[in-house]
Amino acid sequence: MPIALLALAIGAFGIGSTEFAVMGVLPDIAHNLHVSIPQAGYLVTGYAIGVVVGAPLLTALANRLSRKHMLLAMMAVFTIGNLAAAMAPNFETLMAARILTALPHGAFFGVGSVVAAKLVHSSQRARAISMMFLGLTIANVLGVPASTALGHAAGWRMTFASIAGIGAIAVIGVALLVPRMQEHGQVRISTELRAFTKPQVWLALGIATFGFGGVFATYSYIAPMLNKLAGIGPDGLTITLALFGLGLTVGNLIGGRLADRALMPSMYIALGGLAVTLALFALTVHNQVSAMITVFFIGMIAFIAIPAVQTKIMRSAEEAPTMAAAAVQSGFNIANAAGAFLGGAVIDAGLGYTAPNLLGAVLASIGLGLAITSGLLDKRRKPVRTPAAIESATTTEAPVPDTEITSEPQRA
Image (cartoon, rainbow, N blue to C red; front, side):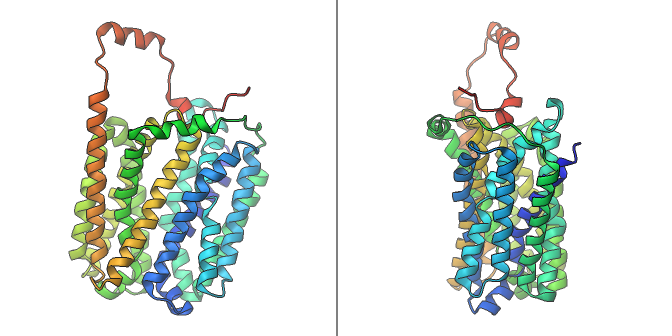
């Protein structure tokens, strides 16, 4: 594999770290900036909103810049945003810095996927893309627990300062290791947006939003929840976050294989299992050992579903290969924003720290309902293929997978 993939993986590592590390230091931020924990939770919501807004805008901008320059610009914004967060004098400034940091998130993964695929032979494209996303997974295993531990030891500002250092390393890596590539051709935005008139596209985004909104309703408040209900301190929290990241890694490995074999059934099983596990967490959260085990399974089951959801969105938006990657990130981060907001709302309403888990189970169940609806629509619209049609298709149809994610826009 080309060494340039290392630069992309480092960028993904930094993005994954900054997105989730804030959850581990929420109590510290709330105490230092004199806001409530639910108010501090809006930092998660603000970041997610930044991703939702930035993903389509910066992806469209990427069509007018070279991919290397776009990656450099996005990682520079990411680094500046984390430095601003580390130096924020008040909560409002910290919120603005979080939104700035989030803007390049979705576009980085969209453009980075294309770059990764073009660095290798066509037969190795999927592997190259997975190498970049490995940085995101490792961030949850190592980056988030490490930055959380650093925040507890040296103050929450050091969490963001250290992530800014990762961003600076990524900028240097992209500058030195990623080769120059051709400029993008002009793409008609109207053509890209036309795919979003399909009900299946919106159903797929709804699955991502509701299904994973349940995860974020719980995970956004994991630090105060475990501290108050299970008596888990800073060291235990670090271990628990590492277990969550390990669950993500295991789930990602399992989910990819399941989605290749049976796309919709794997989605049904994962979302149903997620709803049950989140509901169970309302009981297991009162014991340290059972809480840690359940957090591992929440991460694992959530990431079993992600490959299936991503594939479903790409298939549903097949006319929009550029915007599809942005739509995936937008859907998951709407889930992030809504989950954090609703989780904070039920805590503020006096329902206790187990309430986000039960709310999460409801949201995951809605995602499962949308997935079943989408599956039924697929069956209803699936054409009946006669033997003659099948024979014709196998001899005349061009292969699709190579072009769904990595195809170049056509030049005039």
